[in-house]
Structures are given as structure tokens and as C-alpha cells.
Length: 236
Image 1 (tube, rainbow, N blue to C red):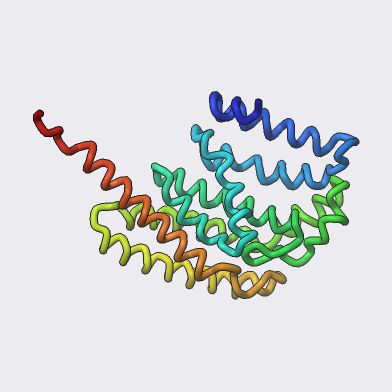
Image 2: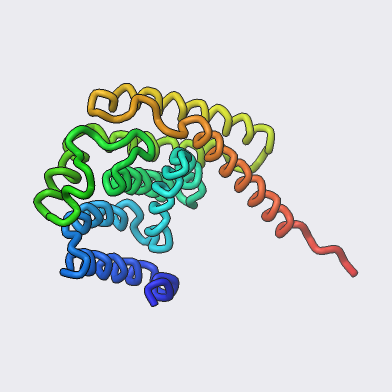
């Protein structure tokens, strides 16, 4: 039912599903008030980052899923496929927020890992106060969310660089973009290392290359599709 509601009324369905999930987490059966608090912090910015784009509000969950297989940076390339510049930036930033929250929830690094002060999930999942002190606050009080800005900038840049007009140019631009994203993650790793995070981003190379490949392939396919649609039909 929730999936049907999201498909028919994306924003209303998403909000209803989010509220239902949070209500269940704070119920006596689940007893996960700390988890509910962290999820609320992650869910709240999504509609603000992606206004009037309800169909995209669930896409950020892909970022931690990619992080689980050491491909988190590929999400930046996925975000670049959004139609407008604000949506590319918003989707990339939201994806990183969910990635960072996912690291706190599972207790394992998906990209850089959680900052110092983030405790084992078993210690805070059942308490609002513990969740605030041991999961939410360490994330907000450190530079741990700084990569969200870099992800947003690189998603916007890739959308502008790879346009589907020339496959060789797109491939070159995508490769240079991937190298830039690798360098950015290396610099961010140095910044975040002082907070207890990993100095090297997981999947920095393979994720960046995959993200660029996805963008180039999508741009090429869309350009070919548009060319076929614009081609006049042959007379019988």
C-alpha cells in the first residue's frame, strides 16, 4: 500500500511512509527510539533538498547500499542524472546524509566511517537521549558532513560536462571528472582523519569510475534516443 501511495502521490505517500516507520520504531514492540531520532534527522532534509521532486525522495537510500559494497562514490554519478542542477545537488547531498547515517546505524564504515564519539548502535538504538548524544551529535558537531557539499558540487559538474553530444568528449570529461572526485575524496580523508574517520575513502577509485561510466552511458543513450525520435519517418 505504501509503495502504491508513493507511486500515485509521491510526496504524500513518502511522508506517510516515513511517519509510519518512525511511529513503529518508537512503539513498545520495536523499542528503537534512538534509531527513530537518527532517521528523523536524516529524513527531514530530503524534502527541503528536493522540493517538488517526490519521486526522488527515496533515491538517497541507494547511497548506503552502494557503500555496503564499497561503491559509495558512484552515487554522485547517479545524482548527476537528475534533470535540473538543483536536483542534482540536492540528490547528491541527501545521498551523503543517508550514507553518513547508515554508517552510524550499522556501526561500520561505508565511505569514511563515523566520527569520534559515535558509539556502537547497540548502546543507543533504544534511547532518544543516547541516540542524540552518541549518534546524532557527533555527526553534526564534526566536519563529518562536509563531503555532502563536495558530492553536490561534483554531481552538478558532471551533469554539465557530460551532455551526450560527443561520445569521445563525454568519455574524456567523465574520466577527468572521476579523477577530480578521487582527489576530492583524498583531501576530505585528510580533513576527516582527525575526527576518527578513515583517511582513505572506501571505493574512491572504483566508485568514481563507475559513477562516470553511468553518466556517460546514460547521456549517450539519451542522445541516441532523441536522435531517433527527431528523425523523420520514411515515406512508404
